Image 1: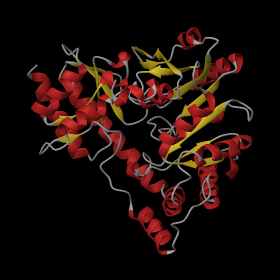
Image 2: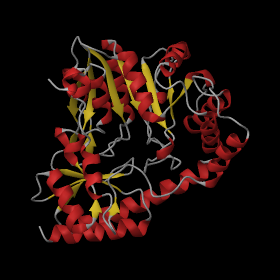
Image 3: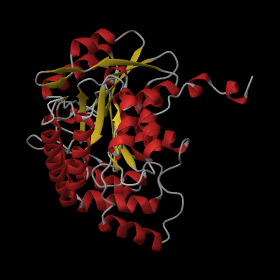
Amino acid sequence: MTLIDDLRADARRAPVSGIEAVANYGRDRKGLIPLWSGESDQPTPDFINEAVKQGLDAGETFYTWQGGIPELRDALARYHRRHFGLEFSPDEFIVTIGGMQAIVLAIEATAGAGDEAIYLEPAWPNFAGAAGVAGATPVPVPLVEGDNGWYCDVGRVEAAISPRTTVMFVNTPANPTGWTADMDTLKALLDLARRHGIWIIADEIYALFHYGAGRAPSFMDIMEPEDRILFVNTFSKNWAMTGWRIGWMKAHPSLGRTFENLVQYSSSGVAQFLQRGAIAALDQGDAFLSAQIAQARASRDLVCRKLAATGRVRFSVPPGAFYLFFRVDGMDDSTKAAFDIVDNARVGLAPGIAFGQAGEGYLRLCFHRRLDHVEEAADRLADWIGRL
């Protein structure tokens, strides 16, 4: 027996991130262009940083509200009214340590030992990992890549529902595929949840990174107040705040006390001075966000054009999020390919297998970077592909 044998089996089984493995391998390579993580190369803008400094100068370094300071919850309600065209109350929002804590709290409230949690694959691995640590069984349902892009076969989702299913995780626009549910798909998934009495955890963090007309469709557009839906979100993507670790949940107001208790017993709340920066992001950050979306669209179009010109890359142009999920003719082992690309192309990509078995044979490229870096990375990849 070793020490690790005395840990809970669910903790021991927590998977190693395939994204982190490649990143750790190539992190210190001189001249490498890192496109493996889901973040831009922009630092947090000054108007957000200044708000944090003001909070620090005001001595806001003490314990604070478990659900978030009232001013931030008010700002979250304003932000949602502005972008979703509906009325929201501040008491629908709980501030968390990043979107990841929001997901963990949502899982803790809806799934545990003996339960099953459905999710759509290829998928960002953290939901399945967190569900497993909680003792639940993650159940992947593969998305389908058709002639017109990725789509969700709702019949497959229904077939995966069992008497043990308590929750369904839906990420749209999706990481890594860019799949974006249309309104009919959202209605069908919500109908399933209603008929089977299961919860939906809705990860819509890329809702504004949508390259169609306006934001992406949302469960908020079709839900009733009493529907079993928990929304998880983060400040990371929209406002270049990945290192800040601040996010939020949106839930029915009757659930607020429960989630505040779960915050109390996990993190005891988010630093108040950080919440000042979050308020600035919500109230002053629309212009910054619009510029980020425009840049991401230009980068998407450029990298798609460059890789398509090789004649050996297969992909669906992503309608949302900021990733290109692609295949290369003759490439089957995505992990081996990702390490080889670090060594021989000096570009960092995430292997598709990191997003589940449905992702094997693919690579994920985050194109949310300055255009010249994306162009150089695409040229290096095209050269690497030409040498396969």
